[in-house]
Length: 76
Image (cartoon, rainbow, N blue to C red; front, side):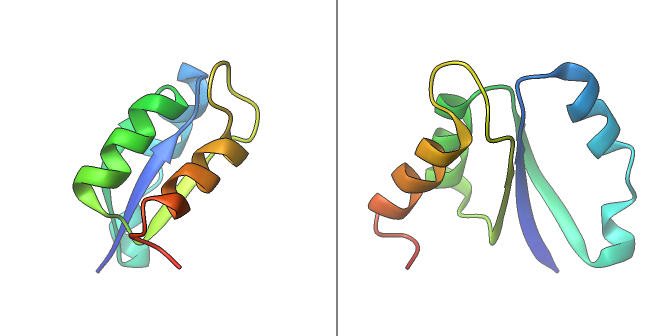
């Protein structure tokens, strides 16, 4: 099973994404974050294979989140 973290600042989007039966696609949701900082913390501690992120979020946006996750050295 593939592991994934979802990051989006909008509650309705997070709820919509969680209504998907991810296990049907062999994906396990390891965490749901409402901002980039929270998501980065989850990425470091849980090391998901997929990061499903919104691009536009207040604070750390999705692009900065991806860049920061890559800089941890956990991902190529």
